[in-house]
Image (cartoon, rainbow, N blue to C red; front, side, top):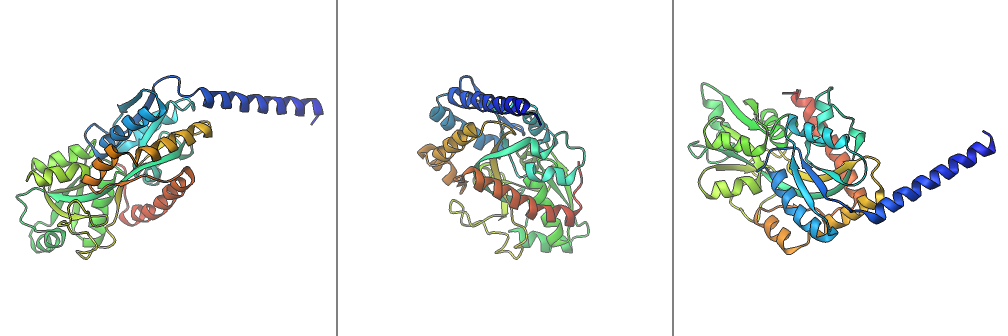
Amino acid sequence: MPSKIIGTLALSAIALCAINAHAADSWPSKPITIVVPFSPGGANDLVARLYAKQIANDLKANVIVENRAGAGGIVGAAYVARTPPDGYTFLAASNGTVTNSLIRSDQPYKDEEIEPVALLSIVPSVIVANPSNPAADLKDLVERAKKAADQRITFSTAGMGSTPDFVGAMVKLETGLNVQQIPYKSGSEGVTAVVGGQTDMTSEASIVTLPLIKAGKLKALATTWDKMPSAPEIKTTAELGFPNIRIGHWEGLYARTGTPPEILDKVNAAVRKASQSKEVLDTLNASSIVPGTMDRAEFTKFTQDERARLGKVVKAAHMQPD
């Protein structure tokens, strides 16, 4: 390659680096949008809004939370994958972000078009039923169902690839029950279906379920994560004899790939600072939620490990698109 061309390419690379550095230095100069790929009221939405306020204060910028629900989070993720990599649009991603492409082949964006930025939280998931259900816990429900003439159980989910979808699949695999998963647009809608008697069971984040359990509108059957200090009376799936039914509602921020790393580092730092604020900790502790404290490299590895672990469930349960 002629030296003149090499020199031109080198100057172009230097210029691009300078542009990115300037963009990072002047960022943020306009409102930041966090896209929640589910309807309002679910765990992702509640946690994203909790962190948004703290991030806005730290970065001295307006932070807007925007709901773009559909297809188990794919609609919102695809939207973020098409935005400019300028650090002004982020995705409040859930577990499904690392597993959707394992379940369906027509995902409208490539996994590599978005990248992990920061873990917001890991929220315990609680399997719940309507209070009219006679079962005392998950083990009791399984035993009763196996003795019943009609062993079919309807299990509402937040859509394909959502955490409730995985819990339903795990319950089916581990108990052998005829679990029929019914997709809704969000976890809150799936919970409403159980409260109203449209479905038998669901699993949703503690931040959503615990208030309804305490109000007598839901019955807790088990938590699929660790023991919850805020509700120690609820047994874990491991305690009830189902250790392989294990999953939490993790949520993290993703950005369009190509966003300047300096900006991503600033967002990660803002999230980690927010996770230690009194307002965030008080809210999270009330629902036994683990705050996010990972740096970008740690969060990236966490998502890779989750994809490998949950990928085995996808194969075993033959999970299919809605």
